[in-house]
Amino acid sequence: MKKLILLIFFTLTISTFALEDIKFSGSEVKQGGFFYVEYPIDKNYEIIFKNSLIKIKNFEENDKKIALIPVHYSTPVGVYTVKIIEENNEAFSKTVKVLDGNFKKSYITVSKTMSEKRSEKNMKIMTNFVAEAKKNPAEKKLWDSNFILPVQKKISSPFGAMRFVNNKVVGYHSGIDFPVPVGTPLKASNSGKVVLAKELTSTGNTIVIDHGMNVFSSYAHMSVLDVKEGDTIKKGDVIGKSGNTGFTTGPHLHFTISIGTTFVNPHIFLDSHVLEN
Image 1: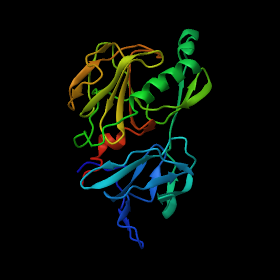
Image 2 (image 1 turned 180 degrees about the horizontal axis):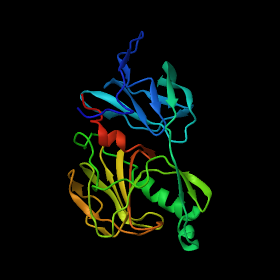
Image 3 (image 1 turned 90 degrees about the vertical axis):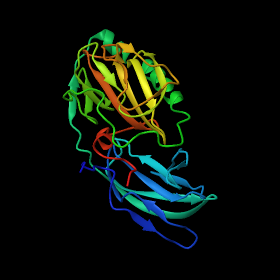
Image 4 (image 1 turned 135 degrees about the vertical axis):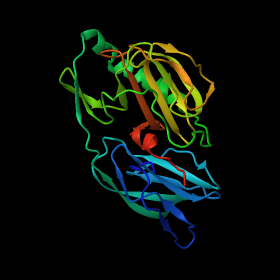
C-alpha cells in the first residue's frame, strides 16, 4: 500500500440546516500541503481561507464539486478559519490547523551574472508568463493515479528549503532538484496538456503541464523541449532533455507541482493517489 502523506486525513462530514454534506479532507495540514473541500454538484459556494477569497473554479469529479486549497510554505503555523459563503452570506465555517513543514535550509553561491538573471524584474516576467499559462486549467482531472518522478535520480535539494543565495535569504525552494547531466531524458510526471513550453530568463527552457483541476507540474532549466504548447501527453512520455539554462549553478532539473500558482510538496502526488478512493 502506498504511503499517504499530508493529504489523506479522516473525512469529516458536516450537515447543517440548508447545507448538504460539506466534506473537508482533514482538520490539519502541513505548510506546503493542501486540503480540499467537497460539496454537492448543484451548489456554487465561495470559500474564504486566511481571510482571503480563494480564487478557484468549482471542479467536478465523481458527481460532486471539489475545491483544492493549497497552503503556502511560508504560511505561519496556527489555526485558521475556512468560511463557506453562499449568496454573499456565511453558511458554514470550520477551523484548519497549519502545522510546521520542518523545512531545511539551502545555501548556494552564484556569480554576478547568475544573480542578474534572478533579478526582481526577470522573476516577475517569469511569474507573469507562468500565471498566464495557468489561467484556464482543465476542469476535469486528467492525471492517472500517483505521479512519477521525471527522472530516476537522488534528490539534491528538497521542497521548501529556505534558500540563501550569496548568504541572503531569497525565499523557499519551490520544488525538488535532481542533479542530472545535460541531455538526460525527462518524463512527464503524469498525463495532461502542455500549457507552456518556452525559454524564460530565470528558469531557462521550461515546460508546464496542466493535469486538470488546477494542478500543474513544471520542468525547468532544460536543454531541449520535445513538446509544444497545446500537446496532449501521457504519463511517462519523454518531453525533453535536462540542461543548464536560466538561473542555475550547474546542470539539474528543477521540478515543481502547484495548485494554481501556489507550489505544494510534490511528494504528496508522488507518494499517494490523490482524490482516489
